[in-house]
Image (cartoon, rainbow, N blue to C red; front, top):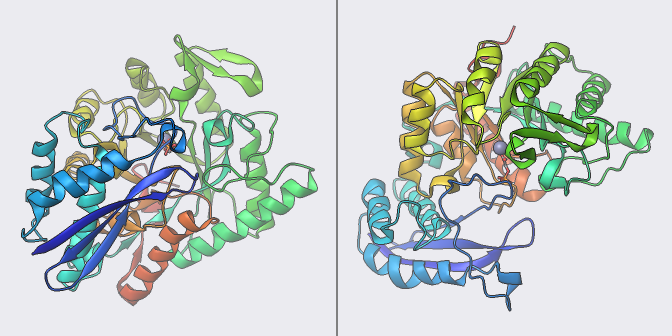
Length: 427
Ligand code: PGA
Ligand code: ZN
């Protein structure tokens, strides 16, 4: 049974406040969970409750959310069986009573939901990935590492596109993939230095130099892969999250780096060219959340070749994902726990997507804590791939390090997803 639940305000990786929750059980077990925070958020995400008290953290304090956990949520959960995740999440959803968790805050609710799940895994004496995923969970994901940052994550000082990722699908194990990514990251740093480019990093730990175009990062990353002794395409491909809602204005995509304003159909052509020039295997948020109908053009053009993931457009919300699937606008959904606010709802979205033969791509947020919950979640749901930033900075590498531990624990029974990770086959 749950003995106590206590929340506090901590700092995230951007130096802004976020919430952390401790769950204590009657048997003495304690577990903790931290809640992340996005910068390029979808408009339909569940509400992240902030104090708006300008005297603290420029209004970003989360003491209201902390108080909601300690004073409103905790008293309703004391004494409950910690393994009753669905019941606990439902109680919080009802207590909140709004469709988007605006009253108690998705940050408050998610902190409790995840702390409870972790406590239940300790109580059940199971590793978290096994508690969540069952006895046969053994699929290690391809880590899509964001090694070049742009867009809002780099204050618009770099590329217009937000995340340029490497996908080491040709490795034989997670550990090998992780080593390759680290080597490519260091090779890229050397290459940028040689070219006189900045090696300062963006919010997710990737380099953010002032590139000449939005294609140049692919050239730089290709060279870095070769310099690390690896083969572009055969062993390591690319994934891209332009986070295009951020540069979509009045029906056009504004590419500042290239002084171009593209209509949706032209933007699709732009991506088609990238796919023809580089081994891009996954494109997330290629079009904006407000440009729903153009997604159909994108999916018609590229949907049978590469994985097309919806982030801002679906916000891990089951009802929106259902509509996306029925209208055939993409073939994969990004999974971010804090977009919807409970573990149970997240798992509902995952199950529906997977039953519909859609991909599920697990993601961190640009503002993170050192909590590695999503590493276990990725293995639990056999997602096959995740993105959690560069192979640098504590809050990013902690997730990758946890996957190394999981692979080690599974030993010879671990399976690396490799090329089969993606919803469209890789040649
Ligand atoms: P965010 O970015 O966490 O700042 O929203 C991540 C993403 O767009 O995938
Ligand atoms: Zn995204």
